[in-house]
Length: 139
Image 1: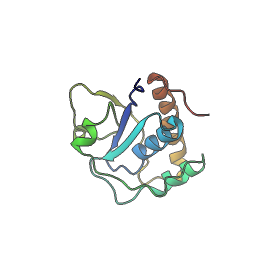
Image 2: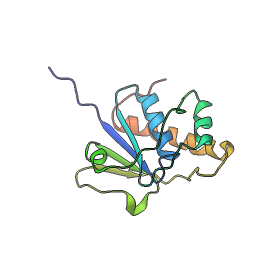
Image 3: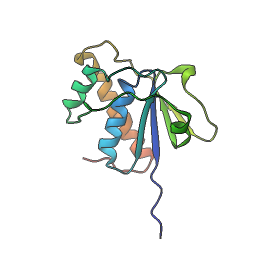
Image 4: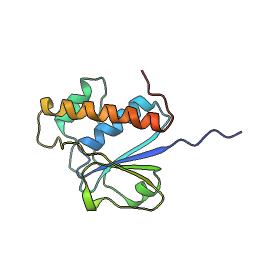
């Protein structure tokens, strides 16, 4: 008897330094290994936004070791769900994938006070995504 396939989700934004990193971190944390998680950027930054690292640390999630990654065709092809966050035409499209576009403010250049509400919106969307995938979020 085989176990059910684990769904895979790819989060994409331009720099892979803010929104997509937060979304991937929340899905990893709340999904508790029941979802394969990827994130990437169409033009990745050198480092993750420090205000994003701080905002996630406030809710007990450490992404200080994360590094922005470049978006590849292989990452899109290997993912069941692709969630874009403001990368526009730079995001590749493959028929047969489930695509969602989350309109979220870009935390680039903003302090932690401005990042907190974006973080909280992302957490709520991740909880909704888990419910859509039939996966109970961790407490």
